[in-house]
Image (cartoon, rainbow, N blue to C red; front, side, top):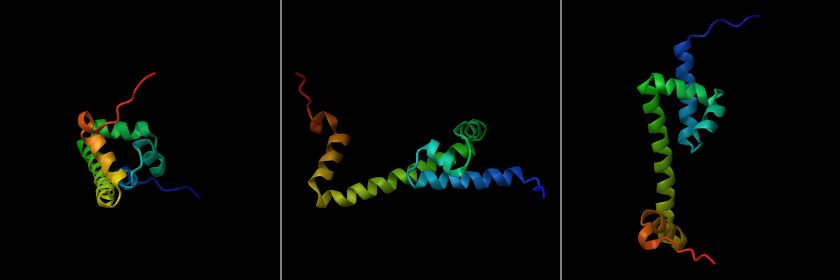
Length: 102
């Protein structure tokens, strides 16, 4: 039996929901595209065609970043290495490790 022709706009909405779910979990754009079963070039084409798609991707990536930053900041008071990593990355001029070359 043949499949009926899907509603293309609904398909894009469903696919974008899957892409954003992957991004919110911390996947890269390419990995999120694989998760949603589209090519990364399709995502970039959609982003070029629609600010709504670009905004959705940006929001999903920001949510993932916030979740990861919250995890790190939550552990910083209990683990000096976590706190040091934050200092080294946020204030590299003052806190970054100095590499001596031989």
